[in-house]
Image 1 (spheres, rainbow, N blue to C red):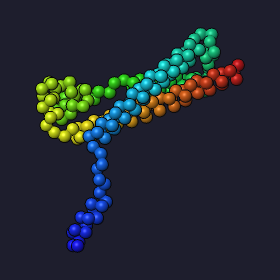
Image 2 (cartoon, rainbow, N blue to C red):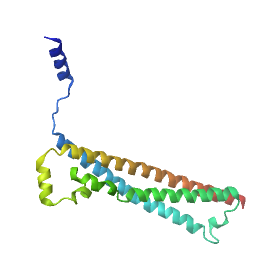
Image 3 (cartoon, helix red, strand yellow):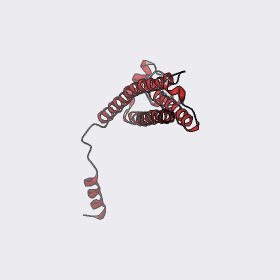
Image 4 (cartoon, rainbow, N blue to C red):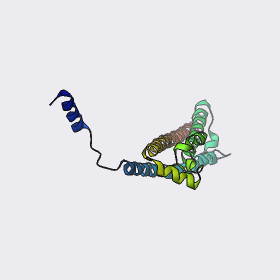
Length: 185
């Protein structure tokens, strides 16, 4: 056996054999990422309700003659306003998570090579779309869509984490302000 044949044989042994349909696998991945995105949107909807309730509760308790209306002094006010700011920032983060992410700036440029995202598909006529789909391999387009969706899902999950953590920290700051106020009276 020559050196070239031996290298080819070794490479063939190391190369994984594809024992599945890559397009079917890509569609499964696409479905999984879609499901994760739907789940994070549902969690964010719940978190937005809780965070809104916490913020409104704090604001209600800050009204005249309520528990938090007596917060005074630089430390108490600092913790109180920092807590309010972090609660508002957390609510804004969770609202970003549940808002649609359509990538509208790039859709007009991308639609001729993509049809999986509804923002792209809406630019096609049915006959043009049928011709495009019958022409070739959908795997590159599907792979691009999986990567784009995954980037969005990752940002949504991270911002939901930051939002939940921020709401806990914000509530804790307000709680510290209330505790200092209660100890001082």
